[in-house]
Image 1: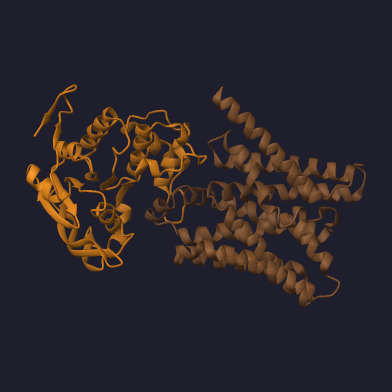
Image 2: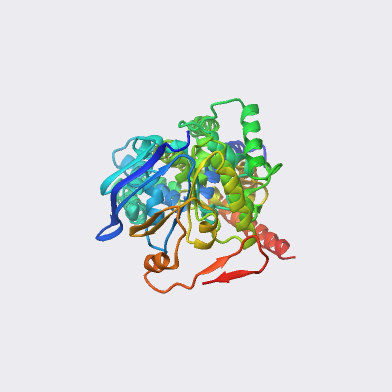
Length: 266
Length: 252
């Protein structure tokens, strides 16, 4: 089974994606941005629809719509906080509606849309892998360079503001990193299930360390193991890969949480 | 230089919508003072604190901090927030918490790691938390976390320490030890404490601001029951805590 070139390519992609998932997912969890992440992920589908409709490479539609959604959410949440949740809901549903409608108006592209919704890592192309490598490099460099300010902005934004840090810049940078990661991860599990892979591994790690970079490293390793195991199971039993990975992640999270709670009470 | 005026409020008015929270408030604070800001909930204490920090702008009147707009000079304040607002689930240890007080405006450490470590150790020592560097913030008790937040404020060598309800939700014994620490820190810092705990505040500060939309008193004289009643808008049962005695309280 491991000699299958499709599976090897998928495993490589999965390992690369887990790096972005672990690093940015940790920031999403500690800053409690999972709802915003969901909003960005679903807004991206609108970009896919536009790209399919105008017959341009979907990667551009994904990239532009992801970054645009992050920018809109960032600006709205900074300027008029009370509109933050309605704007997330609007981007979430309008993005999906636009994607579905424009894909329906683009003959022959229905299956393409489904692969973005539910993911299909087995069909990942060499160019996709190169894209993930580049995105991983961007995420690692930015996080390493701005680790301390990102940590303090996530932990205590008011204090960071009082110290004179450009908190708006770092918040927008964080949302931009989230959009980049969503773009990576949606190729594997699809945008509907992207939140599970970004949020659950870091949540599992939080109980075991008081250092954010260890949470990032541990989450990346957990994601890599879960993606690899999910891929092998889906390949062996011919299950949809994205759904298998997410169900396995959810199951491991559930079992680990129950064990941790029982140990804490004992 | 003791005696120099470092903070002034001149006719400051601020409200949220039609509701006025501060109305024509004027006072000044001199270097080296130990000021307590007391008043009932909703009386404007937190709003005044945010105005001092430049997080809010007055609708009328003027605030100066070291002779300038607070937004320009607030880095000279060491702000200590209420400890129960801290996210205790966040994966951060005490050293990293305090290190935040050393970051420059770009978010980088403007010194070597060795120098930063020495400053963090010194700040922890000054609040009697020696050796707490690797402890998780989430594992600290309320009093320990309050001290760690004071260390974060101290590490940036501030001229003013601004403390928001430092004894709220801590045991009375911890409160007593914290006020002892503040008196010690007052030797080198101007201290401003926002609190609703009149008993604690009046026992140690050199001047008091009584705030309930308007400013009711600002001098070093004893806070009388009449002033407190006018501040809280009704009869107040005042109990003088004797912090150095055990279980003895004087009622008036």
